Amino acid sequence: MTKPANITGNAEIAASLHAARRSPNPAEALLAVADAIAANPAQKRRAEAVRFAAKRLEADPFDADAATSISAAAEDYARAARWDSMEAAAEADMDKVPHNLTFPLARGRTPGEPMQRDTTRLTGRNPFYGRS
Image (cartoon, rainbow, N blue to C red):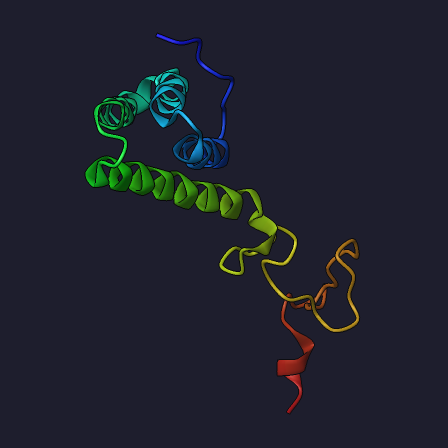
């Protein structure tokens, strides 16, 4: 086992998979990337898939199935990186309402202004409806 690189994000893993595929010795580079992926316990199965593809590329550098599985894994990590960037930019999400704009303000009012009484003190009713 090689020493795992310090790779933390999905974008870095995708970039390192592409770089390992284009390196002069792709099998060794892919094994290093697989060790870095295996540092996350939730990614053990993906790390094993990358290791398996690296072993196939070690035996046959022109193995199309191994190259396709590496490309698919890199695309998965790139897609996950795009989702991560979308979640990081929550202010750009138009489906979410900012906390200070949950309802429109009345015309001429500011958020710090106290609410005006709409009722008279004597009857407790709104004077608008008392007019006939």
